Length: 189
Image (spheres, rainbow, N blue to C red):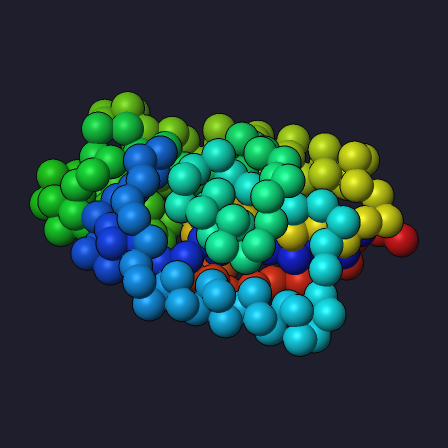
């Protein structure tokens, strides 16, 4: 399988540094133009996909649709880390209310504990990612697959593909991908 992993287009909340998690905000106009440019690049370079998968989030699905794909396989395993009660809050609000977890969220996945604000743990995210990748490998063996997902989730996917498992030490060292940043992995034969 050849796996193309793309972070969704930049949203208003990305710009304002508001935690989205399972919530959504609109794609920025400039990001829509960048998505259309990426679509043109794929067309010019004759890059096509056998299968297009997306997180269930609106921002990911809209990114896929703007790329010109309609027949999308929704993969809930690749949704963004759920942020519980701090979804919709700014990074500054997160930092002032939960300073330790704010630092751990960005820098120390191994110690991150979101119980206090009913967020999803990295361990839960890892289970979803590992299950999702294994499912993709079985379902789409030998295919060219586009997966549109989210920053934190993509960090975990990259860790899994690099190590054969998600390593929380490694996880925090992988930079959060920029919006519309593309990664390509060859998996198996």
